[in-house]
Length: 221
Length: 221
Image (cartoon, rainbow over all chains, first blue to last red; front, side, top):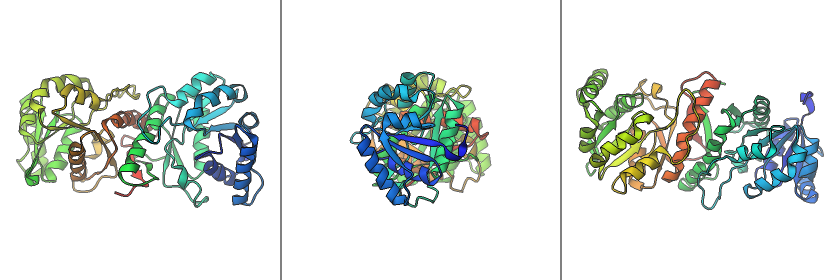
């Protein structure tokens, strides 16, 4: 974590909806990016696709365990149904790391705000005090990440954490990815970020969009 | 509710932080505005102040009960600690009305997302099926409402309701007040709007603002 020039970020469960877009942007921003998946082959396939898009070979694919061990910062982008099992199996590999949890436990066919505790709080409870958890990127529509990779995105990221260094790194990741990000308070506020996904899905349905998200106004960073 | 030209809106608990600013804007937009308070004298004093600002005498002050009975739409802007007792005492007067509940049960000195059920759900449960409840205006910073009364405000309002006509009237009220408003799903999503107040207060504290709020992007109305 000392050398800011070549920080390694592991995108765990990085073959899903959100992971590849974030990986593209972080690679572009100068992070060394590792794609993790339960199966190394799947991760390698996605890594190869992303390398091809960027015309590089710097992105590597491997198992979630291997990616977590090698990384400075880990970003969890698994499907919400795999959240708990992923954390339990990754607990040893995540020891001493920062974990940015993007999970919103929402059923897309019947979206409603999840009951507390938030996914990020569950993660912190499973992983214990040796892992610094930040909630972030819940409200980011995956589909817009892959477009215009070098342009800033018209959306803001809410970062909730009880650990200042985790919040700081999550904000840096968001900014590296072209998003403005705000420290939105402690991990207790993560349930709001998670619930926002249900609210945004309701709005998308109502107004026939797929890319509804939020901007902060009235605050100068 | 048939004559849209002179719809009467009661601002219940309208002598607090949020009520007067909304009342000013709704009066300006052509609604007949009633300020309600537990004590008629206090409501009359605030109504007189608002009339003076606008150079009119159309805004009336009275008890919450009287205001609720006279109005087509009631907007609850009581302090969160008075939420339940206000609803219980107003239940007979609210029968057959639309109630827009602005309440966020947040302790400003120690903000954290409230546990479900949301204030608006509590309101709907107390009032029963004869009142159509919509949650709205939770995230509106009161201090900006009184400025530039005829200009649109740089913020969006989230409206959550299980009753289409309540959602529609709440959206009209917001638009009349210079705010864009979105149908943000059923009453179950009101807990998110309420939790957003805690998150925005955390952000205001972090970035030394008092006016932090949200805009929707990626959705065209």
